[in-house]
Image 1 (cartoon, rainbow, N blue to C red):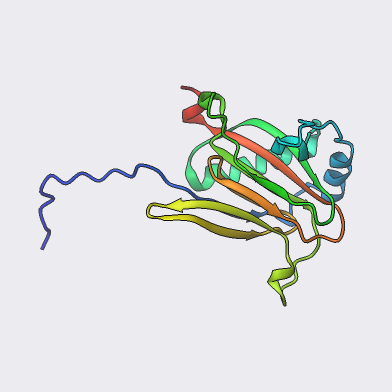
Image 2: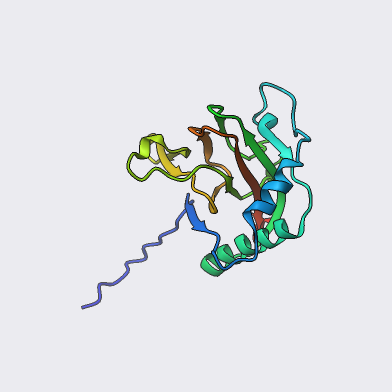
Length: 196
């Protein structure tokens, strides 16, 4: 028996998400080539010790970077039926033991030009230790769940993985690498917000 709706209206106000996916082994995108491109990117986005972008370097244009972006956008659009428009890209280089400080990608004074979706692509990282997960580097996502504040979610940093999440989410990288770590950072707007 179907229960009458009684005029009840349900509206979801917001949704936070994390998407994890690996670059296909069949892809023509070569990790070695991407690392060579990233090694050439030494133009820092900020020299201020108080700015999270001090660990971000300008990403130079390259055909395989464009292929990687197309792959990420295609995976997202296939699952969410929403095209992504690239706003910013960068290379994050972290020395052994150097963490990426907690931050998000919103500019509270310029929301219209802020990204909706952020992406980290794990380029140069060590192999994951499946025997002891505490020895692995992680992306730490901070979020609130209504009454439950200051919750955290750990996403393992794994080679060829990309992690998509809301740009409003505070995140950091806990680096447990013995060698330099290289991540690629992309920030997107969704088509609906990019055309407001």
